[in-house]
Image 1 (cartoon, each protein chain N blue to C red):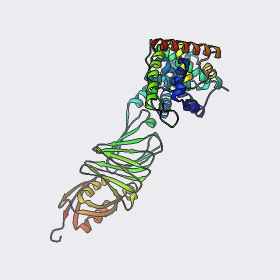
Image 2: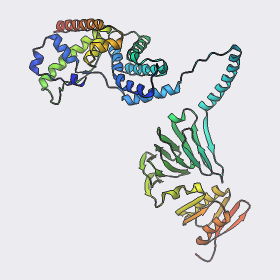
Image 3: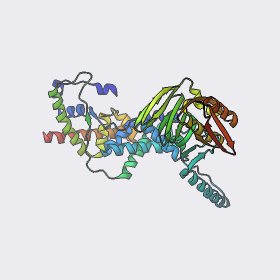
Image 4: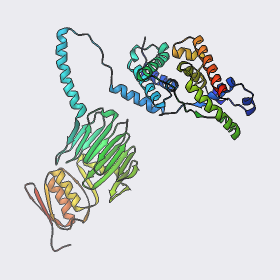
Length: 166
Length: 293
């Protein structure tokens, strides 16, 4: 029986809102657009609640969000400004080490902005949201092989940019 | 995902890594902007969904379609009327009215009072404006805001009485919690408490018997140390009469009366205050009995 009820929708929302919002952010580099689109995507899902099948609902969310991005505008080079948390665990790191990490972080941030969209999204979903290749593949409706490829491409590209700059 | 984040790294470990390792390590500490709290977004979605409930598609015979068009047009007129119109209820002198709001909250409107609210999506947007006096029994839900010319009252599911006439403004709380603001000041009252506008200040006062502040619903009026004039105002409203009084208007009176019998009420007020009254049609003149004080 297709369809999801209110409780299931609420659960899905609290589980998937942040990953979906982040996904759009990785694509667009615009946090307000990301919030808007994620909200729209859930709204559309809710409006189609009778027709939805549980198994495919997550990838459907990402597909809707992706399409909504396309409708809005073309994205050129995006600029990221992530908040950075170098305080590992409970103890703060030494100021020198923090600075070293920050400098590297800044370079990395710029390099990520210059990546092509497909590799960037996969790389950040894996790194920041901690999703496995398998999970990313399900969400985006791609094969695990494709995710591996994009991840490798992202890493190569980032390495090249950063080492070149150093 | 949490374990993933908590991973700790020492400076030595970091420095011995190659670029790829550093990239993987540093990137995991990046945090995307937080944005609005998820709860807020979730509520916004449900509200928007409610506002645009999808229309079910039903196939109809052709002749039906034109009939349906006419019906739709009528419904359209009706919706436009309810969506854009303000709902208004007014009580005349000597009239009390009970009403049920769209959210099932109960209101008893005292005489010569006016209550209005927006007909559009009231459940999500419970805003009303009041002139006069009313008792509210508010169902649980979104914030319920009553605006009066003298100040604003906010509640979340409770029973309360709001009085706002001329410069006089007071609110009593029978259950739940009520937030009252006026002229930049805010007070929160709990059951048994009453808040009153004195000059420009909201002053809290606890009542001996809070139910007396709403006894008007049963046609009983209770006043403690009230100036005579304000009692006469009540008489005018409750009996639809006009009262003329020659004498000291600022004398205070403590009195209980009902709105059933005018003469009886006049006796209750006048005898202990050493006043006499005369009734001509709907006009009452009251004066002090000379000689005694």
